[in-house]
Length: 188
Image (cartoon, rainbow, N blue to C red; front, side, top):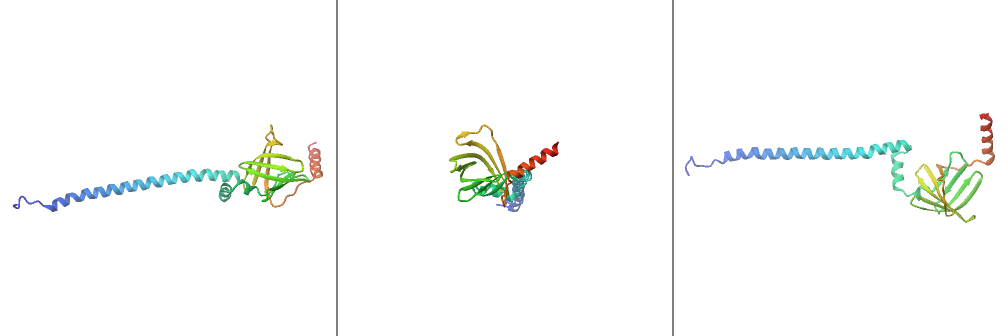
């Protein structure tokens, strides 16, 4: 080979460098685009989870911790405790051993209970009767909706709303009558 026919490798390597740099730059740009897309997707998912959760917490006046506990604990675990209505006329105490006490004014009834899913069945051995409620419970409130009584489906879907309390303080019949007569006199 003479000098004119020699193949200059330096020129070949100069031409190859820009192609490799272009490939590296393209890979870098696609990597950045890929990372950006992943970041956007993660941000959107977080917004989809956080915003409705925040609204739920605000509406139900619960902390995020309470919502998480309510979500991952069973209704039976949450049901155990003392519950009382705002008027002070009715209350329930559900015990871990599957027994309950129901308070109506100064009277109380006891029995056993079972809960399956969102159905609570109260059985009173003294009257040999049972009542089935649809139950909605969380760490602060209990809502019982009557489904059936002694095997007969309820036509009216009466709801009982109760709050968790440390101590049950029911009102006597005379307290209720006094309030009624005072309210009636004030209305005249």
